[in-house]
Length: 166
Image (tube, rainbow, N blue to C red; front, top):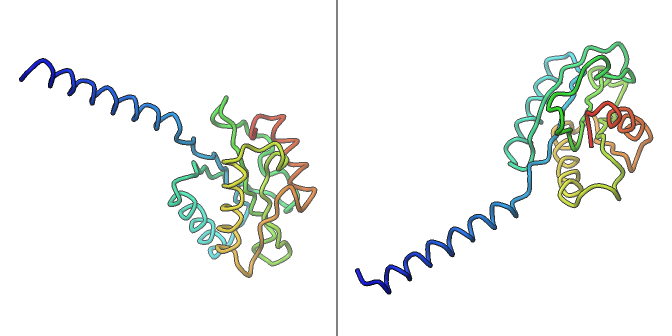
């Protein structure tokens, strides 16, 4: 093998390596989502499993699940718990309230920072998440985010202070 072809070969390896490193840095991080399940019925549990499976299959979401035992749909489902992940809080929190089981609650709260302060990838994934939630819980509930209701805003304020969400 001549010296010139060896230099060309190493240059090709270098260019491909630089390209791979650059593309790895441009790949967006997964959007961290916590699904908080307050429901108790088998049908609701199956929908929650479908929601989590659908979100994971998209490949954009890093999904965690927390089960909550509350007496009312308006109780704080994360009260008394410490956030997992420490310095890596969630981008979005989906709360499936207890009232979905008996029809007394139709709102599924998606907690996030205000829309104008979200990074573009989180804003895009919020729209996708809303669509998936609405499909999985069609007829039982609908996704409500901070732009539509005050409750997710209040929860964001509490959860951001406790380190659950950005």
